[in-house]
Length: 473
Ligand SMILES: Cc1cc2nc3c(=O)[nH]c(=O)nc-3n(C[C@H](O)[C@H](O)[C@H](O)COP(=O)(O)OP(=O)(O)OC[C@H]3O[C@@H](n4cnc5c(N)ncnc54)[C@H](O)[C@@H]3O)c2cc1C
Image 1: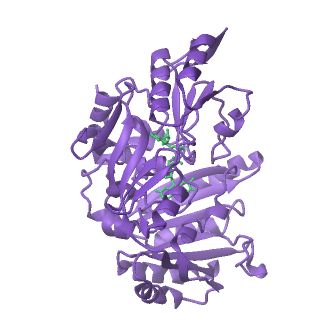
Image 2: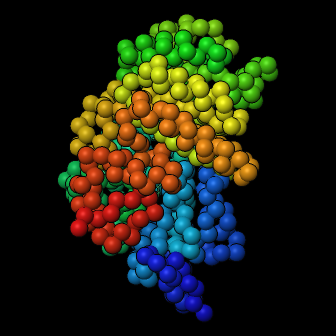
Image 3: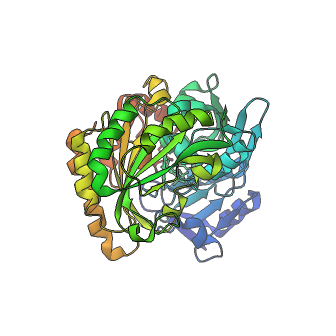
């Protein structure tokens, strides 16, 4: 009997039981079909809004399996989605009816302490990378939620607590092993397929399946000066002005984010402040501990914090600080803007919205960029946004589908209110599924060159479940 999978362009593509059996026979991993054990767990991703049912899941255990999965999809003309950590808010890791190539069992990280290099498999999570590298007092700049996948994060750029000092994840990438649409495993680096290496550093999942990333590591930790300062939201106007003044002179080592939300029921939050609107100053110093204390002092002196948790923290633990607020399964919708400056008008627009949060789990992040990130030329990699100083992400999060409209509208309203003050560009990794019109803007001045790389490496657009770049004519 034939299984009918979603075809790459439209309609369905028939695949026989014998063909599925033959695929099973050559894999080290497995094929999961609807209704079979493991299928539902494999198709579940971070954003609970996404409930797609692939026709077949190929769970890869290594590059050979990835090659088989890519060849099978191409030869049968079947739609293909690639899953790394499954964290992307747009839900591109999973498709309806087609093949989901699932790398979530490929999580090994191998660190060479002598060369300060790490090779990381394409399904690894940030926590895998942090734990292995920190065992040697080493680190690579990644994001602020340790259950995020290294693959999607890196392919879109990748920034976090150490990026002002160390650059984006892609600025520390030495090579990738990537299976392109023709089913060939290629090593792309500065000298081999340099056009492909350029394109994967910011061009998202458009060019193939990365089976492993090779990173240059830097010395850091095992302790850093870091922590949270919790303030009443009523004090936010003055605090945001002081924040702007202080971060203008911040050294590269110091990264200071703002989070505006209702205080969570965390053990460190006094009972009377739980579920009340707060402004959180979150900071991390990626350098010597004593210098970190001095750099954090002016922020700790601001206002009258409800809680001051700034101090020495194990870097691995700090990297997971926000994990309890960002667990998988909730419904999520994001809207994001880039900013050159964080002005009073921007702060006012944020506050107007945060006093009207639709649920207790919604929040707005002000991410602090600049530093080394912005000292790389916009065309040196496919990541063009080298002049952004702040990223604001309206992160709406809720449980009940009946709240979908209220939550999505709240994020869109805030997005509109911020638009006059924003740069117009957006971080490709923060885009929800309905922002296809913003894709060219996300790749900016590098879009045409990316379309040319797409023509060379994926002319049929096999890899289209992403913030998609059509191939140049
Ligand atoms: C709670 C949360 C916090 C975040 N914080 C940050 C942050 O601090 N900094 C930051 O930079 N980003 C952050 N992000 C955004 C994050 O970088 C993106 O969501 C990223 O796409 C996640 O990667 P993933 O592998 O988990 O995603 P997936 O959903 O698995 O994949 C995302 C995209 O990448 C493709 N892809 C996945 N694996 C591969 C592979 N091996 N080869 C080729 N293509 C692949 C997929 O097909 C898909 O198009 C955050 C996201 C969340 C949900």
